[in-house]
Length: 197
Image (cartoon, rainbow, N blue to C red; front, side, top):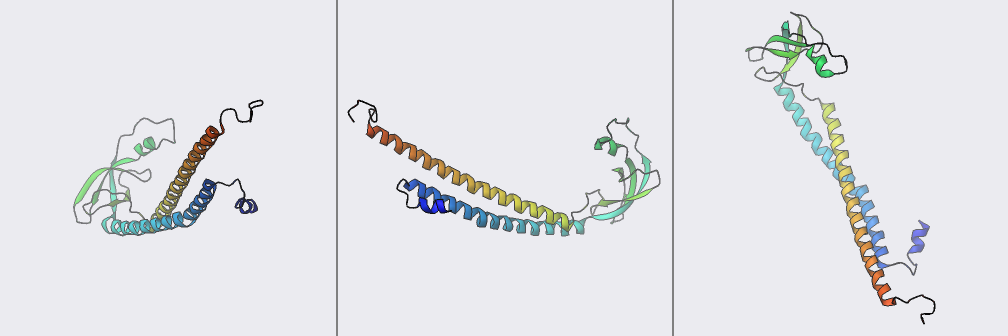
């Protein structure tokens, strides 16, 4: 900090140095205050929208009991137990269920655990009885909102830093151009021994 304070009165300081210092200060303030504020607003807006989605999904989706009619023929065993597609294939069943509107349905489903014929488990369905994904819960919405806020903060911060770097690059181009002009004015013999300078 003392070095920066002494640099204020240094005779070698150029106008572009002062501009660069002000740009750095403005960028630091914009990142600290502006980017975080934009991120907070984005996270808050995302959280509100996701909570509305949570409410709608919980209204439109219902848990229904299904009864296993038969197991789907098993595929050959996969040597890699970590392969989820093969693991899920071992749990495919044909099951029947009754929707909330009273209509009967039958279809092929992925069971949440290994089951046998006649066993029951629950699935999520929409208003017409079609299989639907589990509705989002409020904690998941909160997590997504935090991630959206952090991502927005990082993105805005990177844009501000990119703009700062662009200004510094333009200032450097200007400095080099001025140095070239000064060297041209000094002449090609400047500083050489015996050149009469």
